[in-house]
Length: 149
Figure 1 (cartoon, one colour):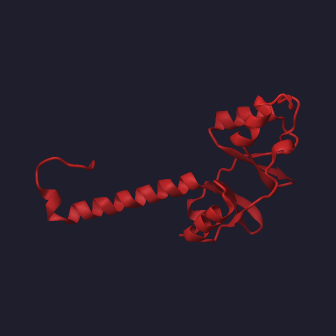
Figure 2 (cartoon, helix red, strand yellow):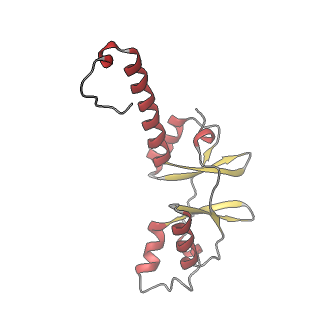
Figure 3 (cartoon, helix red, strand yellow):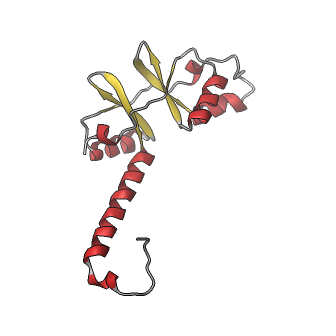
């Protein structure tokens, strides 16, 4: 399965000059963990709750005056949309990243996180369990069920 097939296509993006408070509000409103910071459509890096909490809790920064560029994770790690799921898992493991932008034809095409992978794997395991349950005589008996039907 290609990464682009399971990536989120509606990527929330921001610009380097946006203020920290505005980005935090948008992260909260959109219920996302990070924004891809872009300049002229080109991804520069990610910024998320973890980086921005430093600004919100620090006396060194005024969040309503500080641009988000101060907190961009500028060591951008991306994954090609054609990459496989195992390639993605290796990349996340090797880099310690929780989410990465997905690139196709040199452009931002999506974003994928370790949570997306866990949800996909959980759904696949549920499908396997349902298949086993429906084809196994042991699950036809009355009595306590350990799985929802």
